[in-house]
Every structure is written in structure tokens, then in C-alpha cells.
Length: 139
Image 1 (cartoon, one colour):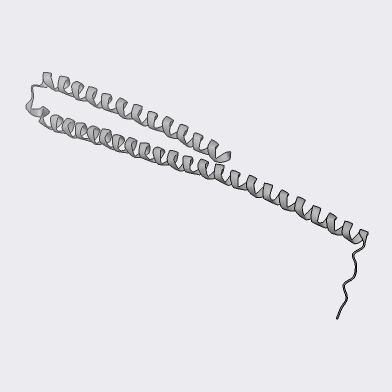
Image 2 (image 1 turned 90 degrees about the vertical axis):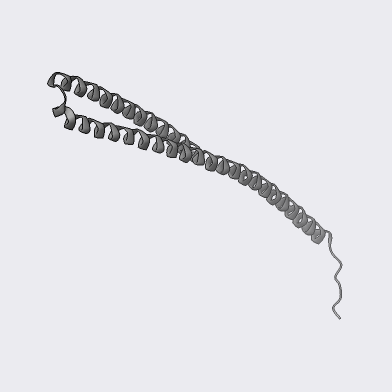
């Protein structure tokens, strides 16, 4: 049978030093894991917030798209009506033709202005939303 050797003071000091270093390393690792867990939690919250914001941006984009489609359809209908009125212009008194054309052109211009304004607002809002998302993603 192997005999047990009595530990010397030097051996005990080495064991105590090893135990102390191991305890310190464990404490550092525990602190690091805790810090990383907190960071992951914050990042997950930010990701969730960004996903929500992106959903809002998509919803707004879809709403603007629906509105633009509506305005474009309205403009197309006005152009169709204008075409019909021009076709009927031969039946109208020549003095009244200019009046009808001017009125129709006024409606078309008004529709174009509304459409252009709507598109400009859409582009501005979309660019703002994209800039915000890019800035948040950079963080």
C-alpha cells in the first residue's frame, strides 16, 4: 500500500494559492457571464423594439402605397373623363370647348399636385424612418 506523505508548509501554501487563484478566476467568470447576460438582455430588447418599429414603418409604407394608388387611380379616371369630354367636344358649342378643356386641365393639374405632394411626403417620411433604423442598427 502506498503511504500518505505528510504535506509540508510549502505544499499547503501552494494549494492555498491555487485555491485562491481558482476562486478568483471563478468570480471573474461569474461576473463576466452576468455582464454578458445583461448585455444580451439589452440587445434583445433593442432588437425587439427595432422589429416593432420596422413593422410600423412597413404598415405606414403600405398605407402610403394604398393612398398613392388611390390618387393615381383618381387621376387616371379624370384623364379618362377628359378624353370623353374631348370626344364629346365636337358636339359642344366651340366657345364652350375651351371652357370645358380649361376646367378639365385644372382638375388634372390639381390631381397632379396632390399626387406629387403625397409622393414627396412619402419619400420624406420613408427616408426619415430608414435613417432612424440605420442609426439604431449602428448602435
